Image 1 (cartoon, helix red, strand yellow):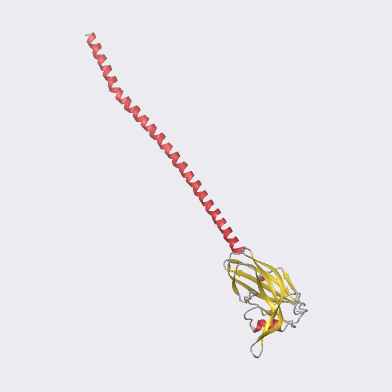
Image 2 (cartoon, rainbow, N blue to C red; image 1 turned 120 degrees about the vertical axis):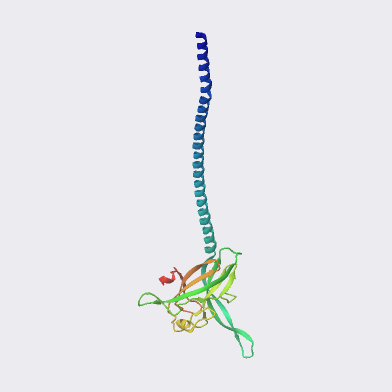
Length: 255
């Protein structure tokens, strides 16, 4: 009887062990899966944050590159627009006019002294279209006030290019821009423009050979920044030897 009871107790303990084993296994498995899930979640969270940081970095880099490219493009464009023309020396040349006789024949006439300014093309061979030289305005020196006074020549006039006698042309090489001329034996300044209104022409018609004027000039072209010059003209002791001096240019508002 005792042996039977012991056998029953043995079978009970064995059955409890068999029943507990799956529970322990399942519990352990569940805990491991949970821990793996937590580790995986943390890993992917870190990866997402890393990718986001890298994305922000490259986005910032791309913005900086774009700004640099635009700055470079602007610099190149400005250089292309600005550095095309330069004004050079002023000279006086003598040319002989032609007059028509009564029978229609041509014969040499009086001479003229032309004042010209040299226009340098800084990139020879690259055309500068719509090149235009303008006399912006003329001022006269006032001895009493000791300053420049604006005359009636206060609006831009298109000056004529030498040789072709046109106000607009295409420049590929250096050229001369006519500013004014003085007829042989006289002292009156005549602006080299296709048309000069009477009120402007009278500025010089009523002048004396000792008067001193300031010519403000600009030269520009298509896609080309204007260049400026101020010339001190006078006195005119002799028709073929006018006094011309290059002065520091002041803008239109500072005249």
